[in-house]
Length: 119
Image (cartoon, rainbow, N blue to C red):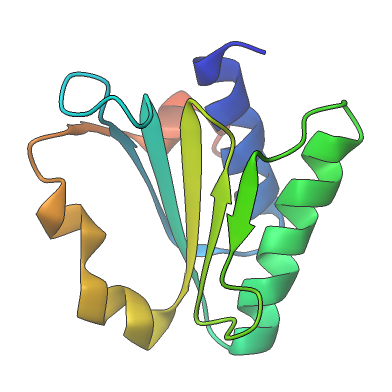
């Protein structure tokens, strides 16, 4: 699956399941580890785990499995590594502490509306 389509499906899943502050950052020109980061937040550790579970399940239904998953034990920051796309699902306070958006501010900030139809 192409990176941009993968980002679209991840963003749709996160949006559908009420993730907060979904951000998409193009990092292809800054690093070799991925083309995109998708960053989202949940309001509780239960929601953080549920959001990651939904993404993993919905992509798995299409035969797309993450190469690596980290953080399920703490549920304050779960990382799903799909190779060209890395998904970061944070608990709100953990997201504010690590502030990945600031660390990757030189990346291309892509509007969610480019990937998820808005009502």
